[in-house]
Length: 304
Image 1 (cartoon, rainbow, N blue to C red):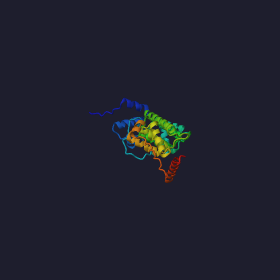
Image 2 (image 1 turned 120 degrees about the vertical axis):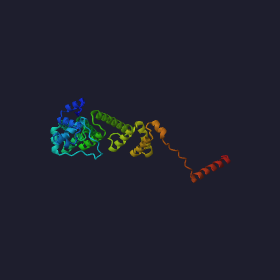
Image 3 (image 1 turned 60 degrees about the vertical axis):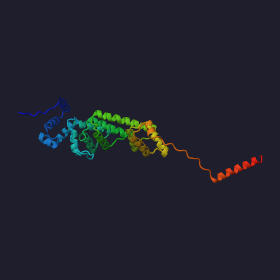
Image 4 (image 1 turned 90 degrees about the horizontal axis):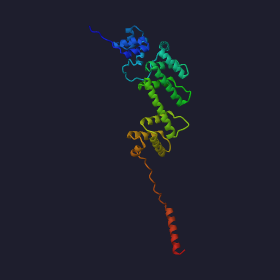
């Protein structure tokens, strides 16, 4: 008699036990036996509600025990749930309830029903873990205040856009999130250095377009010295800081693969202005000079 064995590793068992989610454990066994991950079908097979299976599936995804099949690119919109469903989920899911409490504390206000939908979509649909969501939220608040002033808070739509970016870049663990935030800080500090020391912009924040230009130049790999050369050439040729003109210079260097002052001097030397020839004398000036010469010659001839 052949018996099919459902293999559950010790690590997987520990993860399921730590989650304290019986429905998730039951669903995982169901999936190991080849069952469907669709909440409606799993609910019928396991005699649970569809809502319970949806929450269990989200738990498995957060634990890394289930990955949804690849789907074609779709418009970036989160599922829309009713306010009643959201409140019921918040009452039953302690992890989401904790995320909600921390989010309201960080934002300094009670989240609206629409804000709650967005937050749950980030938690459930994008499957970002609770601790990663808090890093994401605090990062958005910090960035928003730097751009628009202390005390200003972003909308949840702003947070949602950043969450989609994190999801696409697979920033879904604490290690990945902390590394991403470290790079963001380094890029911000580099942008501030370029702003003040290279471009001489002081006493105001960068505009959104200016920030995009500088971030793009830094991502290409240009340092302050190369940017200073591009800035000097821009001002000499246009008489002012023309962002689009400087951007074209740097893109041309990027295409040529030249990033250091030495490479730039060899690959794209500065064009030195030619000296203009002395202007030709006018006819009246020539006649005046001839008159002076004749007067001087006559005086010498007379012995004066």
